[in-house]
Amino acid sequence: MTKDCLICNRITQIQEDTNPYFVAELQTGYVVLGDFQYFHGYTLFLCKQHVSELHYLEQSVKMHFLEEMSLVAQAVFECFTPLKLNYELLGNSEPHLHWHLFPRQSNEAMLRSPVWLVDKSIRYADIARPNADQIQSLKLDLLEKLEKTAAGHIIRRYQSP
Image: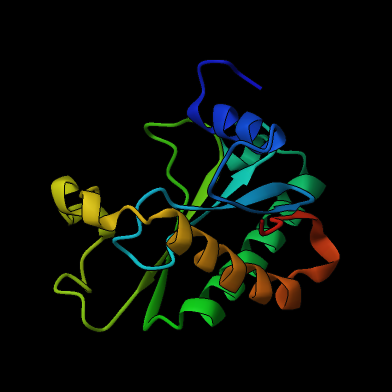
């Protein structure tokens, strides 16, 4: 863990049970909802290891991480039934392996464009930030699908209050 890494800080919050977006811990990473839900169902899969590049992981860990990301993506797809699911592993602004999973719907004006082309003032608008009840509902729905796609990989689950 690195103190100046946003992803490491989020993982610390998960470990301290203070991250409101936590859904599940898998063997190689953590499933969390995006802070903003302009793309309904936007989910991230955070690698447990602090590395900046996929090829820095030991081969068996890398393959397991990719498998688990695929299982998370399947759960996201089944939960939010998008027209298309975008997978992104960038790390330019946060150099810690983490997948962005963006469900894309047919009613989006910019469906054929990358999500990053949607203006930040729209993606990060207050209306795109879910309230506590919406977060809980999204987490429970996604966890239900994760229980089916990744059951043998789940170490810890979100516990509803």
